[in-house]
Image (tube, one colour):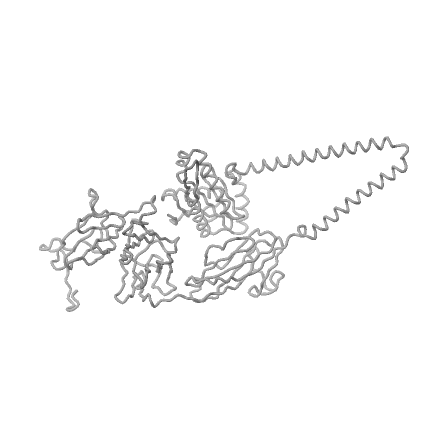
Length: 608
């Protein structure tokens, strides 16, 4: 269109212009030199088009026999760098770089075995950061930025704070930041701190779903993103974060999943006015609800908590407003909880509640003291009575039974010796029985529970879960390429890797969890009373922790990685046998997707 005349010029196929654009399905356009245009198409590659002549100067189409040609014909976005080279985002061929002087393409593909590669071969959007000489790509697997000078890839996913790994558009902000539209909201990426600030429909967006090819930055800095419900646009420098530090209050205290009424012995005052709660030893399953006093998009408030005396570290960040604890031993604990507002600003001063769990009467100090004195008195009474009888007998029969008394004394000494020997043998038998019991249920190499003990544990836990209407998480993991470790470092190296996995499992599991060596290089963790979301996070933390362990054998360093399948009873199976099948299926899916990842059964949730 000519803005001066409001007239349109249509470029299409005619007999006089057989190379017009009518069948090329344009998807994106960028300015080229000499007033020409770079045009991306849907399935036909890339064109250099001259609007003055209405003709195509050059066509760049995929050619499987030419390694220097494009690898994919569908182009979603184009970007021109400072050297006038052309970057192309393709549907399945990764990131392409065209040198207009030689017409040669350089390919940038995803390599699952190389961390220094683009996150996905599906690329939706591009932005060339001229100041830092970085080409940013929005892919189907996250945000990838290529430092052109060094060839280093900067990769970010949901694990780093993105709301979704499917990125639709990228636009620059006012400073060293990027605005990113995704399939689940908009994110502002602060480059200096590598922090993501996420916005959703409740923040005022048209919706959470955004589309390919619908992003734009206006000449005054205003940013536009198009989505399934309309258009979202804003001025970045007019947005400000909520700086309010939200205090936290306690709202409810429950025992065995039942709220404790106010005025009861456990909760004589309202929970928000209580500083301490005292429980009996059998009341060791409780939950605490809390809330942050921040009402600006309160659904985005976040929480962390810990029970001092039971936990060393703060819990993972969550939006849930409840903490649950089971099988807590008698003692005095301090429950602490802190909150962040809708923009992630944390109040570092936590709310605190002292929780005292009393020991049973036979475990109190006064009972032990009384028992000690009673035992002393009983022994003293027995000894005194014995001495009195002996003296009485001696007084009456002193002259006639001196010899017999000596025989009795000798017999008494012999009896003590026999009793001592029997006691020693009994202690040895008990120790042997305990050792045999431990060997029967534990794996000799790793010290974890063995597979024979799995059925016994599951019978008890499944019955308990049915009573409580709760779930049990099955987490099955298999060490990736373990045969290569054995072949390279021998069985001694393989055993060292298996022991490291066992040590990590014991350190990463709760006291209520059950870690098993399932067989060979397979391991399983049974986690009662655990949500799928929490299980996925814990599995991902375990995977990352394991891959970071550096092992050494005979001067050679190596690492161990694992694939993990996760399933939940009774959501995915009705009994022990069904659960083993579905969790094995989830593990197979993790292996099939490329290993070193976590897969939830029945979903495509996984970690690269």
